[in-house]
Amino acid sequence: MAGRQTAIVTGAGRGIGRAVAELLARDGYRTMLVDVDAEVAEASAAALRSAGLDALGHGLDIRDRMGARALVALLGSVDVLVNNAAIASDMVAVMNLTQERLREMMDINLRGTFTLSQEVIAAMPSGGRIVNIASRGYLGGAGASHYVASKAGVVGLTRAMAVELRWDGINVNCVAPGMVDTRMMASFTDEMRQKLARREPRGHAASPGELADVIAFLASPEAVFVNGQVLLTDGGKNLGIPPL
Image (cartoon, rainbow, N blue to C red):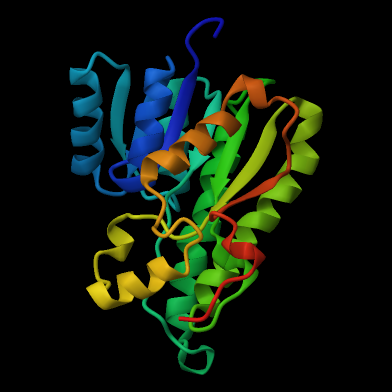
């Protein structure tokens, strides 16, 4: 890499975001770990610094435009943005979904991704890379219409941004994971985990590190000719799954 590039990873206090941030830092990026929990972000960054890596922690609600603007001003220039921060939700039938729950999901998962992206793009040079994290859930699913809609929005946003920004030399891609072993699975019973594992072609959920490898590739200069793509990383489950 010619010179040290800067990367922002959101939702980087734990899980996929934390794994991506560590991998980018090990690849030589000056890495900003962003999380809504500032203490968690700084603790994760401190752990990376103790390993000799260039990492900073920063607390930010990605919906906060002025906070996003201040973060970008602090860094000066941003070469890579990984929009990983998001929320999931308990299952709820579409007829029982409230306006409030729908609004919160769309507000964080879609508007938050849009807001931070817009601020970062203003400070992103030609050759910049944006990787949005959606979910295989954007394909559809019962009991999660608000989550599905928010992640389908991220996919659409990715494609639209890629069409516009390609002329500025900025690539925008999207990763759509299947089941990943993060704290979002913490509330699952052992029985539910076993049932879900039987639906996985690999027999188990992906680890955050396995997803980080894919995301880091799309964030790399080597992926210069990959643009506007939605990469399903679910072990092939999107090809058809057996019933529970």
